[in-house]
Each structure stands twice: as structure tokens, then as C-alpha cells.
Length: 355
Image 1: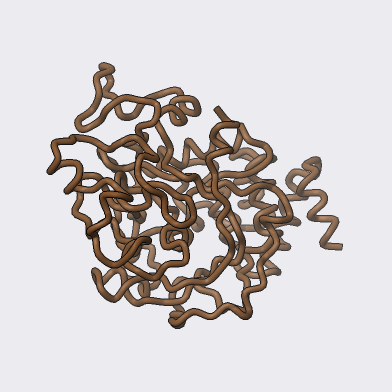
Image 2: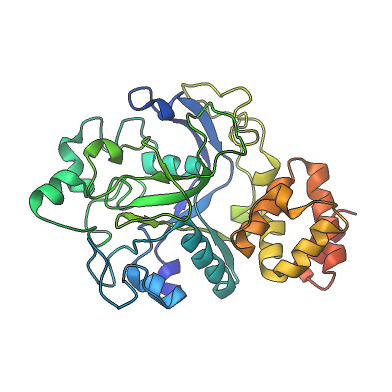
């Protein structure tokens, strides 16, 4: 299963683009510049029932009595649906145990839209009007109104210019971001919903636009919700920031919004550096929940509840590394990790590099 899954990932180059839309809903505004400083790979389709079953050994799209839930068909190539955000995180955690040559995660919202647009600026990756949408995706008109009652098998429609299928419609896809409202809204602790992207098979065409955004509690789901995987190979190619200093886009950045998520074209945030990705990988592979929380409460003096209400070990790791917002904090995290687990070769090498 793993080899087949790995073969389904498409390389996505680093770059800059204009995120959002001034033609849609208020939460898609303002259009603003986003930088994807590091390349990554994205699965050409959403997680299928066969992949989910192989990794998790269960079927959330079935009820406890084994019968299919409403608006679902069973089949290896059908997308795994009825997946909560929390379910997706648990699946990713298991994949990270299985594949020692990379780490997996959900795409950020910016990465998702960047990949969906694939260097286009139109409402859809194929143009501004939905007349051709039936060639590229499943939505209300060619499913519900055509007598179909569920999401369709992945990869049956044309891909976007970067080879990604079903970015427009079929099922909504969880991304890693918390939903705060418009793109200019500042983070706040009251927000608990996660962002969904892509549109659904039973939703109008408007929901399939590249900029369209929805949100939902991480514990909720339905017949049209699943997710798509990012895979980051542990190699220099995917941990070396690209030189984007000469790449310009016809939109401006948002001053102060989403600290660390909208960098200038000349600046690579610490969380997009090779060190950041390496310590994240090392913590995922070389620590457990007990070791990590002991490190936080001890040397770093951080209360776990000050970082996140964690749903899984993977989320704790992501919260921990996200704490490091500058180089000094990142080096402090590496030092604390080394002293907590000095036998981990990857962490030991990073600590040695600090001099």
C-alpha cells in the first residue's frame, strides 16, 4: 500500500501567488500575496477508502452494524468520507510511523489554494465560468441533478495544470488552518473551527472555486468530507528555501495578519526553514507524548495548555514546533530536545550543528 501511495504524490514547486478573491464571499477577502517558500508534494487525489482501510483498519463511512452510512458507496477508489479533522490527524500520525523517509501532514490553506490554482488567477483552474466544470469536477449539477447520490471515485475527471485531480468538487478537504473569518482577521483563542476547501459533490458550482472557503468543528463531519495528504521527503531538495526575490505578484501583503504566515518575498519564516522541518521530523519519530510534555514543562517552562488543547501526539508536535517563531526559540527547542533525548541521532546532529 505504501509504495502505491507514495507514487501518487505530485511535486509542487515553491512560489508566490495571489490568494483569495474579491468576487466571492467576504471571508475570501482581501486578495493578498502569499509565499510558498519550500517545495512539497501533494497527493494527486484525496485519501481513498482503500488507503484509509490499510492504514486505520476501520471504515468510518459505515455504521456500527456494518451498513453503509447515508450517501456513500463502497469501493477502493471512492474517497474516504465521514472523516473528521481529528480522524485525519490520527491517520497522518500512523502514516508517519510507517514511512521513515518522509513525514505527512495536512496542507496549509495557502498551500491548498496555491496547488489548486496551479499558476492560474481565474475562479477555477480552467477559467472563470463554470461551463466546463463537469469536465474537471463533481458538483451538484452533474451528481444530484443527474441522479447520483454520493461522492464519485477519485481521478475520473480531468486534472488541473499541475496534475491534481478533484481540486474542484467531489468532497470537501480538511486543511490545517484554524478558521478566523476573512483573510485579514487576526488569530484569536475563541476560534475552534478548521478550514475546509474544494467544494462537494452535492454543492453548487460556486463552492468549487479555488478561493472558496468553508469551516467546521474538528469533531464534525458528513458524507462529503475527507482530506488530501502532503508528503515531505526528508531530503535537501525539500528543505532548501527557494530564491523568490525576483518573483513578483500583482497583489500586496496584509500587514500584521496571520503572523508568520504571510512573509515578504525576501523573508523565509523560521517555520519554513530546513531546521524547522528537521526538528519536526525528529520529534515525530524520536519522542513520545510523555517525553515531549516533560521537556515542555521542565526545561522550557511551557504549560501544555498554553500551546494547544491537543487531540493527538502529532498535534502536540506541530504545536511545539509552531511555538518557535524566531531563530533563538528554534535553537532553544533543539537544545531542549537534545537534553531530553540525547540518543536520537537526528536531534544530536542538529544540536552539534549549533556549535
